[in-house]
Image (tube, rainbow, N blue to C red):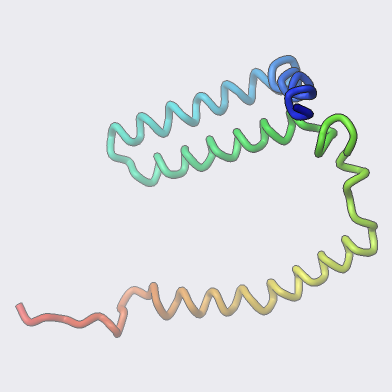
Length: 124
């Protein structure tokens, strides 16, 4: 029942905010683009348009909630971790990226190369 009690806060943000109409129009344009691309069998364009549409829907949800995480009590600022913790997490992500990204590059290079050596060729 708590969610139903505070649903007007989110709905008002999605309908009456200054960013609402442009965001809805962009989301509709992405949906129509995806459908047209599917009609013309442009699979990559359809996939990209669908990804843009999902992204815009998530942005609309986040902006509709703003500045709350859980309306009406928990704001984004109140839910944030202390600055020292955020700096440590950012450092850990940077170190992890330094380790992970070269490994991913090597993995994709081995298994998605132009001339895979593991392919069994049948005589024709």
